[in-house]
Length: 154
Image (cartoon, rainbow, N blue to C red; front, side):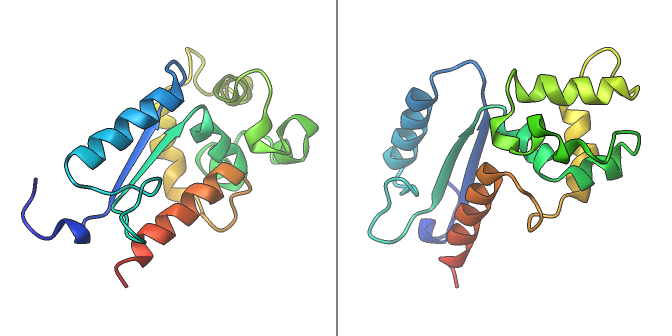
């Protein structure tokens, strides 16, 4: 463990998993944090917590749909009207696989013809994201948890 007071630590564990039992994974992360003396948001010590464990299932792509302006800033050829289409109005409720839908939209405009390279897309989109305009509910929940975590130190 690093030097310093663990109560001053702020740790965010963000795991993108589509293939594991999320409840089991989250419980493992919670137990691991507690085993080294780090209270979590789910299991705080009083009002204090140090760790946020967040398991995302296709949510990262939903977060892109939630800030389509950022996607368009990175990939100007994609249609501006995607968020107005019924299938994409609620970024957290896209049917048929969020990343697959995201990949199809990009591929139709000539991007990632051999398959979505998720890390490359994340690096291209992230600098353009504006947390205040993101319409994804799951993104806003994550953002609120971060604000809560950071606010404990003030």
